[in-house]
Image (cartoon, rainbow, N blue to C red; front, side, top):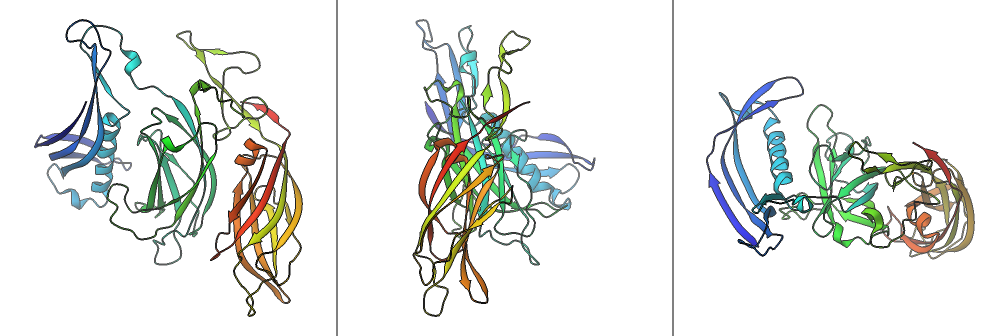
Length: 426
């Protein structure tokens, strides 16, 4: 049963706030207004009155939450930045203790209802690849972007990327792992900020991905448009895009999906996969249950890249043509190769294959830059940045990849992975 609930009250709640600088602030919370949809679940059904054993309640949809903050004996506005930080912390705390899939179970008839409580259903592996065309928040120079990712807004489970200084097109290539409790209703949230040093970071934009759109065991490659606010989307200003790779595995693979990372190669954080045995032994917890262990595996192999062709490249010459060639290099190892130059063509065909020995495939990236050859130099046309996750999982792929930093154009590539796994226990 789902019920619309509106509540207004004026309780006197005093919070003892302690800052990182050691300053203690007594904060009063008052004038609380709340509107939302509560979900009630009557389960399990029973043959004795009232015909159900327990009631579970949860906040299915928060529509509005307002309250007033005041420093006891003073004005909170006199402490710069503290109001926003406290409001955000309170909202996170309320949402995470009540918002679905979190639920409170109230026994009605005595019994064990622990199975109704929140439990993990799977693991989400996330690769934060890059962002592009970010809105510049700095007056001098460029923004210093970093990302915060989470499924539930708990401080212990929110992940933060490194900061890329003075760059509106940052490349992170970082991995994060999240626990999923309800695939059908939960989202992955991504928020991009400009690092302001000792001052509060300024948000550039945010985005979210519904987890129900993921296919277990399949890599989902997405570019997300950043917006100012996920709840109030009146501002349609373009703020840039963020590039993610998502990979979801149900706990225990009960669905019958075989995990390609468990036998021949595995990951940590998009490299780590839960394993029940290490060196033939299994750990035991204090309650006698088995402990799932992890094994880090270096995914080593040979990446064969066939640069087939390009289409609809931007004109670079006065005659409306270009003399394009492609430079390929691996980000970690620095290995490079380049194709031949195709003269006077915006739709060149190369059909050239290059092999790269890759020592750590799940952390490396393939970068392909397209250049226009001139007699007295070269002109940059655009690039493609590719992680190796998909080709490692599928073995071989042929696809077209849009050219970043160009008005038009795409590269047609064939990628093949030959694995040579090396195991490293941790």
